[in-house]
Every structure is written in C-alpha cells, then in structure tokens.
Length: 315
Image (cartoon, rainbow, N blue to C red; front, side):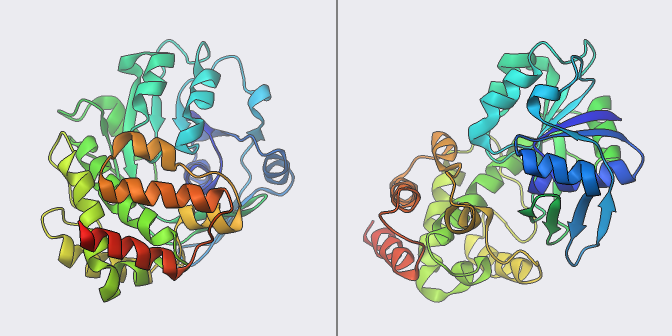
C-alpha cells in the first residue's frame, strides 16, 4: 500500500513502523515538530518486549503534506479528528479511502470531509505509548479488527487493509468491537483517576462493582451486538475483570494512555469525545472527575476511585 498516517504517536507510529518494514510506502505526519525531526534524523525506534527495531520512515508536519494522498490512516486523539479531517479534505485521491484507528466513534467527522463511502473503521487494542521524540513503546500484541462501518461482507479494501496492517483481521461487525472497547474503555477511564495500574484497578475487590456498572452503561447503549476480545466478554463482566487484569499484567504498558495524558504529558484527554458516545450517571461522574484532574482541582489517587465506588454502590 501507499499510505499516509496522520498522527505518528503510540498507535500510528507502531503501525507505520511495522508497515514500512514490511515494504509498504508509508509517510508519517505529526504535529509535534520535535517528533518529526527525530524520526527524519534517526528513524522511528520501536521499543519494548514485543520487539525492538528502528524504521527509517519519512515524516512531515501537517503543513508539508503532499497535495494528493492515495490512502490515509487517521491515528490522532479523537479530540483532534476534525483537524485530521481538514487535512484530508481535497487531498484524498479519487479512488482513495481512509481508515480510522482511533478510540471512540469518530467516523462521521471523517465521512463529512471525504465522503460517507470512503471511510473504513477499526478496533485496535494493542498497547503502546509515546516515550519521546522518535521513540514508541509497544507493550503487547492484542486484537486488531478492520471492517466496513455499516457491517456486512468483507470488502476488497477491508481485505487489503487486513493483509497490510500488523495483527489485523477483517470483521463483519467492527461497530460491535468498537462498542466493546467503549465498555472496556469506560473501566479504564474509571481506573485512570487513581494511581493504580490497569490490572489492579480492574481486579481489586472494592472497585469491581464500579467497573461492572460503568461497563454496563456503555453496553446498554450499543446499537449492535457487542463483540468479545482479549478476555472481555459483554455478558460476563465479572469474569471479564479477572481476564482483563491477567491480560494487562502481561503487557509492558502498566497504566492507560488516559493516566499518561493526565499525569505524565499533562494534556487534555479525549473524555469529552467519549462522553458524546456514553451517557449514564456513573460515567457522568467519572467525566466530572477527569475534568477536575485536567484543571488541577484533583490529582490521580486512590481516594478518587473510592469515591466513585461509593457513588456506584449508592445507585
């Protein structure tokens, strides 16, 4: 494939490096000038227990994108989807298409920019972190599914993408996987208000009822059957907690990207975008708490998780 990846951070960088090494024609695009410079000077370094290698893949800033993009993969945080869509509008080749590998339900914004029939969606669950300019940690290998947004039979472009991207398999129900991630992600949002690891926040007894309650809020809003993955089973949330904890203990990524945004990178999270998809009293309370942390009124600590657990128990 000839593909431009918009967002060369944790997920986009991992995908781009692996596609480039497999022989695909890859161009990375990122708004972080230091990251772009480091990639062009020394390559993109993939680190961690899965494999360590360096991909000498070209990278550009948004202002330096070519006038025509054959195919694109969007890997920016969901709150930056509109900016990514604006970069693609008018640039996508007449027979080109866009794959979103983002969290949340972002396809409509991309469809508005490039056309409803030119966007493919995916579910990505392998763990990765941006460590610094030119450096990405890949913490594990996990489920990666690609499918048409409307569901149905596997199309040639979905097959092409599944063959080209690392770990990817095609699916006829990509939205089911995305809603499964919304439910799992809701638990990660809850855990991120503390300083516990993902595994501990999921498995410790005082917080299990909270985790199941917020996951169920998401599942109840899903318009399609919710799919299982990596230990998550929508009709067995209690058992899912133990399986997901075991899955996360095997990863070099101990804490979520949400926690890193709040406490390491000190930047705004995707919570408002996710809140557009999930509503409910427990998740609403989590969103308010995330806002408090973003704005300096709280810090990430176990006391927040205890407060959430008490609130969920009172429902």
